[in-house]
Length: 184
Image (cartoon, rainbow, N blue to C red; front, side):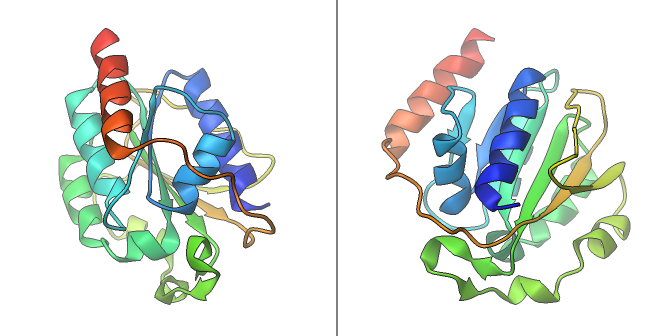
């Protein structure tokens, strides 16, 4: 399965369960948007690796709403320390999903040092993660505010096509997302 397909499937399941979605800068953002834009999507721009930290903040501020963070393996490797804080805070409404393809897909398939990471080993070594799942075309995920802290690893192939250009600026994304969460 390609990253775009995994993201579309996860996002559909998340939205069907009323989840908010935070997407990492780059390919996770463009594929999330390409698979179906929604005001419940917080598309990140700026430094790589911030999706887990931002999703933690969203989860803590909206404890009755499921939150999904869509992360790239290379970007997540840049902020592994976020896992310690997330494990300590342990919001039961947060699920982290890593798109594992071993490359920085958005920048032309540059190899990522994340190939050395065993995500399941790391997650099982941290406290308070209640769920680890490997995601494929047959996986169904139920998102809930009280399901427990979760982690999903999506083994994906590098992209075979480019997504359409991303149409929003950071201020537009922020204003739209803020309006959406305040209306909930």
